[in-house]
Length: 315
Length: 318
Ligand SMILES: Nc1ncnc2c1ncn2[C@@H]1O[C@H](COP(=O)(O)OP(=O)(O)OP(=O)(O)O)[C@@H](O)[C@H]1O
Ligand SMILES: [Mg+2]
Image (cartoon, rainbow over all chains, first blue to last red; front, top):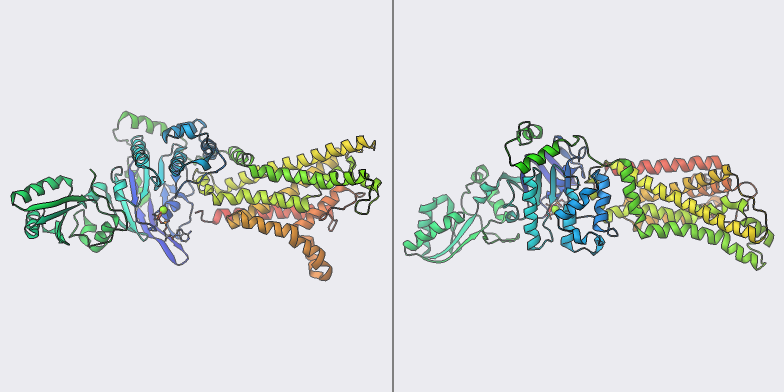
């Protein structure tokens, strides 16, 4: 869908020769840290900004020429503060050519019906965000583009959003979703792309990226723990970092490793699953060719200071 | 990479077996037209009108001009007339004559070259500029209209509101001057339908020129405060300085003033007022003749609109 897209603002190259393909019917996660160029790419996809070079095709037509069948929420909601939520959507429905009945449908979808009569300026952050999502759904579009849709949502709101994304996907919509948290998209996305500084780092299925889960084992004696883990997983997936064994292993391996360690009389004082932060993923991806070629990362991620929130395993 | 890859997706000719929900949704989707789906221009204009009418600022600006117009062209002269005093050097009889129905066109439009213009320019600037501040332009464009459709809808809605403002000004002035004529038992010599229509059309032309300048400034500067400030300074101060200070001193300015929007607006009002009218409102003066003024204003209206269109279609909306 996007081929060789480049966008420069002055001398700063914000998106650099980016090529991605979102397949019809899938939920596609678009990941990157702050300033990676996600929003800029999505804007180009919608024809809001003109790429310096390269093309973006949306549903087979050039971006901008065809916003048909695309609904989007880009970088936060933008609405008329003096109109109510429903009036805002009515205005947009007229621009979209959507039937007036859609307004109430999408309000129900995002659970805003009971506040629809209130002025937009009185909405809370999460309500504004949900109204933004509602506006993206007005046309019942084939492709839904959501730029960080969970911004400002509480945990219940986030899980509602996840359910909504699944429902959209089940109804046959294609969803393109940006985020800076891998953990946020991995549960709903079929495939993800990770970009950093405007360049594509990896485009792969979530299953492959989940191979990047890390098991942190604190045990005594450390050497023996490392040896046992290495025997189970192979040398390329195990390393010793700062007094702990780091293993590239998902939750499914944890019990097996734990049992082996205990049977070998190793004192296990800590065993926790760490989801990779994107930053770690970037370092791995850029640090080793092996990783770029496949899901199996070579060696441990380098030590890092987690700028992006680090998530303990919750699943 | 895209076209080829897309046909590999599930959207290709042979749909994959799927659950019933998915099947119906896709079947429903297929009946949609394949082209761009966006509202009609009429619907978009309606949306813009809704936005304008629900906005308190519109009412303030559009109400203020006719109200001030009435105060300055009729109420104040009438109070002065009742006291029997001279008003701006005119004897009371002349003051009365200047408020009677035959002066309806002049008294309804005399504020447009200056304060009326400033207020209507502000309306245009608010209409265009706040879309950027609120981030609503990207939301609108995200619904699929072409950028020129958005501009056309904005312009049409603005024209409707301006036309109503001109009508209200005529209506208020007509009521007041009719009442004065009846109260003072003076002859109510109403303008002919032709003059009235020319007055309405000319008033709308002037209002549209100012409004489109506001629209241009709002889009160009992507905000409201700066365009309004610049517009006001231009309409209320710069043109005045050029006409009253620079033009008498320098020949170049004397020629240049004939190309200013405010000067042409003032000349058009003077021409529409007719020959016998006393022109006492600042900004209203027959510097160029009426046909030329109308031509220049129409030229400005087109120029401002084209510039706005070029700007809007070329720019990155962030
Ligand atoms: N209009 C603009 N002019 C100049 N630079 C811009 C403009 N818009 C974006 N940028 C720059 O482009 C880079 C990428 O911005 P972008 O908004 O695409 O990042 P992002 O991936 O969406 O980040 P975030 O996670 O913070 O939303 C940033 O360095 C930003 O400063
Ligand atoms: Mg962003």
